[in-house]
Image 1 (cartoon, rainbow over the protein chains, first blue to last red):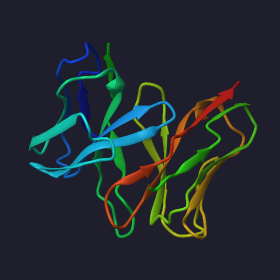
Image 2: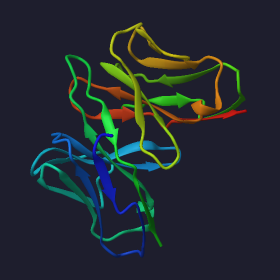
Image 3: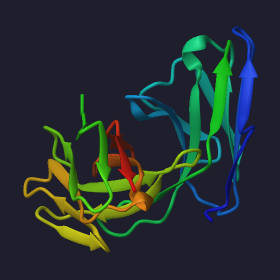
Length: 116
Length: 111
């Protein structure tokens, strides 16, 4: 158990409404990531964080914003949800790697979002 | 654009058969990871390979990193229903801490 919890696990909302997904970790890891997973696309990085208040964009960041005010919490916000944002969202933390060996990613159980 | 192409996208075989899943790219990676994901859960790391030509075994699963570090394969011997899942490869670059993900191979092992 890597100590990652995502909330909510399931959400149905309407187009145009704001949505916030929360990722909470108990492991004090520096790096945290938000991915979305859609059939045929694998995992696509939305945003990531490398410390408190330090965040950067991933490959599919349009329409999403993030915040990290505490080490343990990484929030993903959809300011105005669209149907194209219907997806399963995964939060991940990065474990400690070694020389030339990247750290393992530990994933939460996912948040399934449906935008009607 | 860096891409990792996985093949096949879907594979359904009988228990006891052998299979190989491939992960190919035109880019060179410093490392490659394989994850397995079960329905309703997040991916879980199976192995990390970092040296060209490296072979790692995990019980009935054999992972190989290509000599040029552009491709990798996962071979399962005598597949079992418990091997069912989505297998994802992810390539790492020294220059940043992001991973390049393949689209996944959905594997079903029928009893």
